[in-house]
Structures are given as structure tokens and as C-alpha cells.
Image 1 (tube, helix red, strand yellow):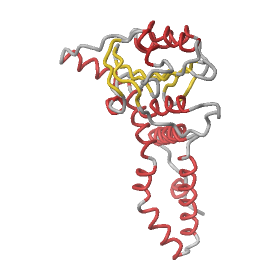
Image 2 (cartoon, rainbow, N blue to C red):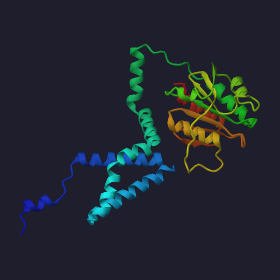
Image 3 (tube, rainbow, N blue to C red):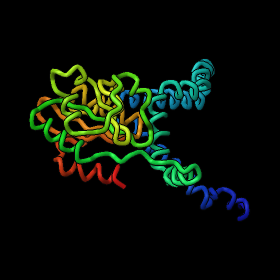
Image 4 (cartoon, rainbow, N blue to C red):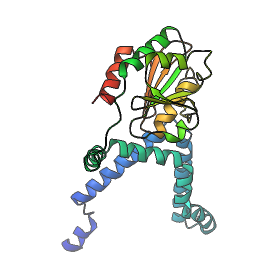
Length: 266
């Protein structure tokens, strides 16, 4: 008969820290799944997972040749993952930094230490009125509002404006015969920094077919930065709002104003 002391060794000892460890891994995997869901990276992820499972099985059945070949692939898997999932990793780090509690606290400390003067607050009424007027005339528009990231790289792809935000100026830029109406307007603080800017386009497969280039560009820039993007549809006159790669369609001007006040008036 097996001694009681030896039988107790057979049971898995789970500590409280092990439970926390499992929960943290589960949260990390869920966030990873949320980032790549609906994109082409989802298929790549399942392909890599399948290869790993096959490698585990061939090792279990001691299939030496196939195990050696797959082992070579697995050994460089981390580097391959970094290269293949570079956009998703970038987006995850941006999301982590933007949502971090320490992020806002750190900015406040730096502002106090260096007496940093914050940017002039956004003229929200001008943006909302311009979007409402453009929607009424079914004039397409794409307005990107920077939060912390100044979007310098994307500003350089367009025409420098560097003018105060105004309802009339925004409507003039997106007027159909204006040379600046194609592309996006980037606003930082209360300045229209650039117009006719080129933005990255989201490759999400979950977007409806009715989404045109403006909507996909709005989702793309908010995937790559902490910016907010507003889209006015040329076909329907609907106003849409993009944040963190997700698009809310057909919002009313009053809803847009409430969101912008919450984001930029504080």
C-alpha cells in the first residue's frame, strides 16, 4: 500500500499566485484575440497554432525527422511572430499605454515639473457644426483629431495648413472642387495642422461592404494611434465616429458633441 505521504505528492499543488498567473495569461490571450479578430492576422495565428500542435504530437509519437523539421521552424517562431504581427503588437502597446492609469498621472507630473502649457482646447462647436453642414450637403469628409500622439508622420503626407479650427475653414477644405478635399484633415489642439493627408487603411474583414476608403482609413489611423476620427459619408450623409479601430455609424450631431466634450473639454 502506498504511504499517505507519497500519495499527497501525486496531487497538484496550486498556490494563490498560480491562480493569478493563469488569470493574467487568460486576459493577455483575450486581448490578443480582440486585436486580431476580423483581420488577416487571425488566419496566420491559427496557422501557427496548428503547426505548434502538430509539432507537439510528432514529438509525442517520437517521429524524429518530422519533429526535427518542425523544431527548426518553432525555434525561430518568436522572431517570425514579431515580424508577422508587427502592426498588432504596435496597436497593443499603444492601447496599453493609452489605457494605463499611470499614463495620465505621469503626464500631470511632467506638466507640473516642466510647467508645460497644454494645447489650446479644441473648438468643439465648430467641428460639430461643420460635420452637420457637410452631412446635410452630402459632402464627404474625414477629420482626425489627435489626442496625445501628434501624428507628425501623417501630417507630413499632406498639405500644411496650421490654422485655427473654424466651421467655415473645414467646410471650405472639404468642398468638392477644393484641391484639399481628398484625404484627411488632422487637428491637434485647436489647430488644423494639415489637409489632404494619407492614412493607413484597416484590413478588418468584419467591416460591412458599404464602408468605403474614408471609413477604413478612419479605422486604420485609430488602430495605429490614440486619435479620434470623424467620417461624413458622401453617399448617405451619415456621420460616423472611429475610436480604437472600431466605428460607430450614424451618430447625431448632439451625440458627436457629447463625445468630443468628454474627450477634449476636460
